[in-house]
Amino acid sequence: MTKFTHLDDAGNARMVDVTEKQPTVRSATAEGFVRCAPEVVAAIRDGAVPKGDVLAVARISGIAAAKRTPELLPLAHVIGVHGAVVDLEVTDEGVRIEATVRTADRTGVEMEALTAVSVAALAFVDMVKALDKGVEISNVRLLRKTGGKSGEWRRPE
Image (cartoon, rainbow, N blue to C red; front, side, top):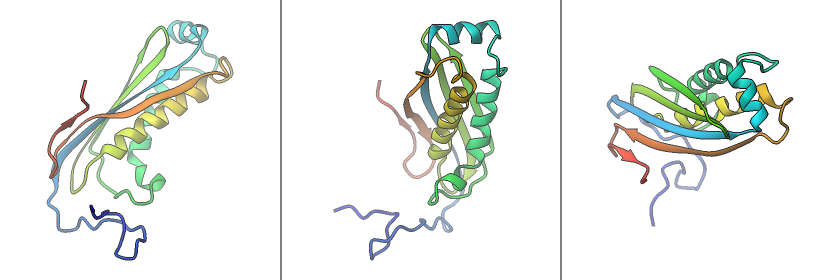
């Protein structure tokens, strides 16, 4: 049976010690989707959402979240987030969110990319919830990661 790295010999949760690992360049890209009513999509496209610029607020929220991931996930390492890009694409069904996070550190940034997408989606919902109570977040997932011991990984098509 595989030994779980986040459990000690007694089965207690622990933070993995990465002190001896050498920093390497790493990146991770995640995506998610926020489905909303056609009226919300039209309001976003027209710049007519009462709370303001939905896409800018979601983008900045996602970037800030990537940098604060260890505050939210107790076993995540504090790492230097050296780059974070959050892109939002408005579609007829809602908005697709993609976040890429980069570092040169001892551990990967998969959780930071997933957190960026998740919080950007939540910020989007917060900005449009008065217009659409049925807004829905879906398909938050890792698309690819590079660097570290396991090298490159891509989600199969």
